[in-house]
Length: 196
Image 1 (cartoon, one colour):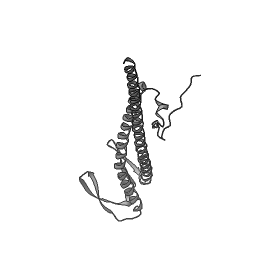
Image 2 (cartoon, rainbow, N blue to C red; image 1 turned 60 degrees about the vertical axis):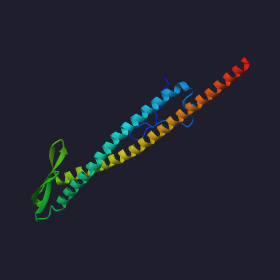
Image 3 (cartoon, rainbow, N blue to C red; image 1 turned 135 degrees about the vertical axis):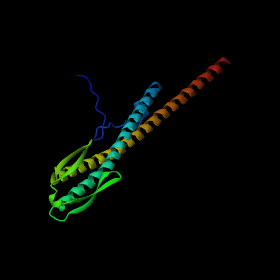
């Protein structure tokens, strides 16, 4: 049976945690391993930054979408609350970003609402079903936004951890080079002393 490495720890959405280097010698045993290690850290930082950009975009999209869902849900609930009233409502509804139309709506006659689902698709829903669907959609969007914010925090921590690890490995390499240089100079001085 082959040995299997344990899976690296991840956050709840499966983003792997960056390795924390407490002692460089536990991670890098010789100067020959420094360059590949630094390259792998840079590659991991790039991956985390890519995930950070995508998660930021997704969070921004959710921040734009949540107010629209909330506004639509409030409107559907308002229609539901006014269902028993016989007085017609005067309203302005949006046709486009800068174009509105005036309409008179009789809440008692409104049995269904039409909701844009996206991709130029509109669907008729009974008012109660529309309110339930919008409430679910709002809850999912808010949970997704919270997850995005948690992921962004986690990604920033991982990037910082890798930057610190990179600095530690690089500094360890510099110290090793200085030691080798000092040892090399010491040997050269002894050789020169013997020749004289």
